[in-house]
Length: 303
Length: 283
Image (cartoon, rainbow over all chains, first blue to last red):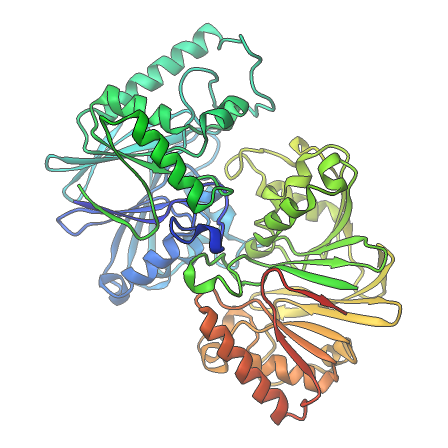
């Protein structure tokens, strides 16, 4: 199994000279299992170029069977979807997976992002056949030869982390999430960080502990962990309520789950290539027991 | 008037080494009046960069004031808004103008963008700055920041977009970022609207060949932009809204072909510029 990154950035695409090496597109990772299944995680702007490449194969003939796992529907994880060329080829099938919600079905949420006045073609109306699968955190299911598991992450409006396993090889995609210590992020808008010394209420603390244990369990024994490391530790301390982690938080989860390879992902939009280099060099020094890289657009990893 | 381009790309941001010269950010133009008042035309991802550049000014201290004019609300014209740093600073004031006949409808468009499904901000109410929403009158002139602003609705695929005509002290700037004219002819009304503009910033998404395959998307080719500029007798044609798949080299040749088209159509005296991120032009 291999993975390939098409978008590694968080929040907003950042074109320009300062982001060329790591790339300026928002989140999109392709999983390439040996059985040839087309499996994509997240549909940030990176999915546009992936779509163009897929059109060179089965998808260009209208024979594509695409599986798209969505971590959550914040713009930077879905904004490339309207520009995903296989959607506009009749015969292709696109199954979209995301966490089921009480307030709105997935098809309705995606439709409202792609219809008038925001975009001319509602995702429901594309030529490809769109199907939706709403997930419950903790559930497992098969896509081709892959076993997929999902768990809840600590992020506003709630995101899912995924483990994708083919045979004895597994990759985990954990984006977006805050660490599980300071603040529980669910449905309420939290306008400011907790005051120093504030602890989460007991029931919230318990939820956080459970969420973290579930995430460690999801990752246990996997090969490669792709993790939201948008913040430095300083930035995290200022914005724990934004729902993102620093590299040290990812290292902690990787160690506890016994995962040897960590990929820093969801780079902050204001981070230039040299700054990503520095963050990578720093965490490599602090975690010499792990093999750590920073996700770069178009980079492929053998798992 | 002075304009600076912060985003010149159409449809979707196009990061990568192949777009660094012209830039990969979606639509955003900074217009400064003679009094240095700020009018922002469209809120694509270029707006985030403009916001960062504004922070050292009064906008960083909550003393900023600007008008924002929207051609329409397709994502590439609003997706920079949540990342425009000055909206999070209390005290800053923004008046947002759009074609929607009811200002509440315009507000709902931004509220929808901030909806918790899509944005951690949840609602416009959680931004620090103050907002007013205004409808642009399309039959008469509007006044904003000391400018006279007229608007024209032009076809844009399945919908329409506004073209703008700004006038200050006898100088005229026209901006039409998204214009999908009917194949048969460009209406006289459109030509009259752009008539005699000192600068016309016009949709130049496609080569004529690419446009022929994608006419339903509602964008202009360089051939139409050249025709409009020539018929309307403008002084300076500025190209914008390049297709997301065009590399810098392709935009170079788009500009060269547009030059030939202007010359052949009798527009030898019309200046031609392919807009790029960071470029500033005097009107």
